[in-house]
Length: 442
Image (cartoon, rainbow, N blue to C red; front, side, top):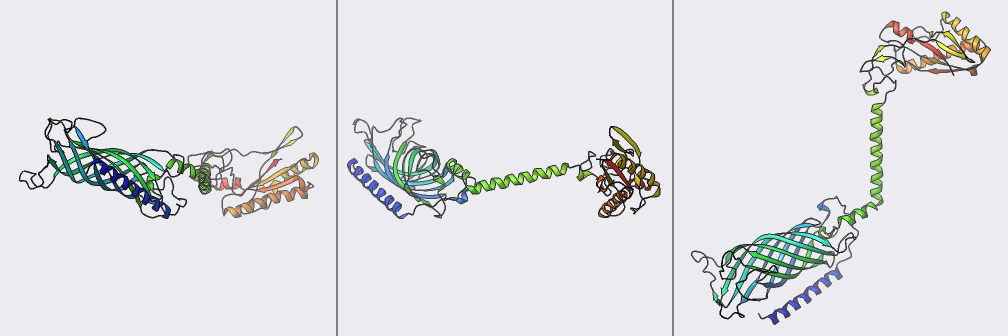
């Protein structure tokens, strides 16, 4: 094939490729809005693609180097590719292509051999493909990608030198039709998104053969042969149409898009609420209702008396001394009011409490003011019953004071049940002290 014929063939191929892409684009419905998330994993994308390509094979590469022949020729090559996209920026691609590579020494007629033609039965390789840049970087899905490739493969070929075909004579016993050599493909290219399913690719790959027999001519060591493949082709995305193609995903633009998503904001608010609940739970763990320095969850005696000395589990070691009630009369302190004690399971006032109550009544009637009567109980019985009993005891004191001439509005009552003991409930002596009423000036 001469160079003129080659140019016509390549031009016709490009026209055909563009026609196919236009038709595919016209028939492919516009892609709907994707529900893919930045950290949603590969399962939400299409990751497989199949490509076809055609182009020009030459016995030289852009990086230069020594060549066994002074003149190179361009020949047609064609191939297939299958790629698995592992991330938006990286994929693994298998390639196979065929064609022929040729060159001559027409500018150096004294040199031998005069020319060669190497038929490539197949070149098979595995490459890593890296997307290195994009033009439409602010869009959720790109339309143009630049990429670089590198890999490793095996090429099977038959070199014909000065018209002499040695096919079937290779190997020690001449039992091989083709020579097989390893090669390393290194390339770069640009990809245009034609439709949601189809892209148009332009690529250039330099192939470095691990041997000096690709052109059938051995030069001085350590010279090794090489050839290049410039191609154009179509790539078709495989998989469900409902999923976007991972190769075109722009995670930065997707993340920005997600931040504007109302549902994401709701998730963030829900997360804030969960964090607040956790913080509240932590505060609850620190809660110390009786103020003895031991958190409720570890407190074996959750109603320690104010001022009591407790051990590490909240049990009282030393109880505070019982205090007399103090009522301030103008700026003068009036003391001498002991706690009003009660019998077990009783809210009936003892006669021994009358003198203390009469003295309190006299002060309130003569000087005015208000008091709060606080009732308490020992720990026998249920907490609910003890709370009711403590209220009844406080009301008994109020009734006595009101009957003695104190205004009802001057006396408030509260019941605390078995809370705030002033002595140990483990002994009868302590329980007797806890069955009490205390009065406090408001």
